[in-house]
Amino acid sequence: MRQIIKKILKRTALPLYLQFRGLYYSGNTVNCPCCNHSFTHFLPLGVDRRPGQCPRCRSNERDRALWLYLQRHPAFIAPGKKLLHIGPEAIFYNYFRKIKGLQYTPADKFAQMFESTYPADTIYLDITDMPEIPDNTYDVILCSHVLEYIHDDAQAMRELRRVLKPDGIALIQVPIKHGMKKTYQDYSITSPAQRAIAFGDPGHVRFYGEDYADKLASQGLAPDFIPFTTLFSEEEIRRYGLVKYDDFQLTSKVELYQQLAGMPLLLLSMLA
Image (cartoon, rainbow, N blue to C red; front, side, top):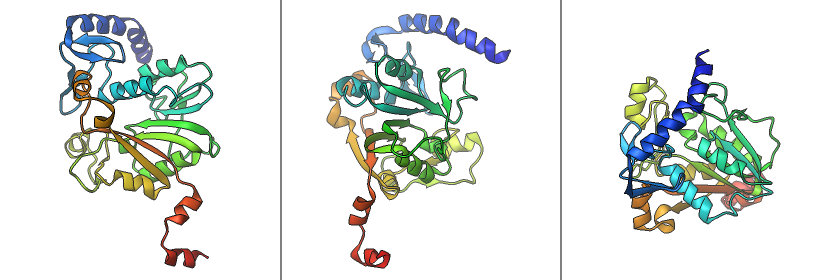
């Protein structure tokens, strides 16, 4: 009964509330490209209460950045492609559903637990073990801010690589603590309050450092990180409320022969 009530409120009261909240904060200081409305400021978000949430559509900084990227690079996710979307945000679910000819799979391990949050056709999928998905299936994979919740992130990377096509692209985005060279994780930290202090969120199990690209590479993925400062102007970063020192953490599959080409000669001789 409780879940039914939550669904009803989400479909009726929530949209009305967000509409009025958007009107209350309307202005010309910042702009949300996801809902195309302007406001006096963005609202507090996250444990650190940073000004990052859109008053109307509830987008955050990374949502707005990805939205702008998709608008400016329509070929990235286009008709005819196969897209796997892990942890499907409602605003992007609605965006992708409008692309005719796109073969779109919204999925998450907690699809049933968060059924009031995820779209109804979100399938159950554990990205550390996806036997139901054949090798080389998807042209594009979106997996944004998911790995920091997963204990065996290396296995998740391997599985995402396996189901990605040889010429495919995956956006495997994680929060990186700039200035911290090595990823910090401590599995003895289990309470939500302690994790919020240590990792920046009560559900996170690690804080990625500047070695994240190396972690992807070690699992057969070729990182191609694009700094926001090369994609957006200073004024755009300010107006859209983006994180200046963030980047798009794109990656592609490294084939076996490419991996072998990068091995030392001595190791290759041992494998022969």
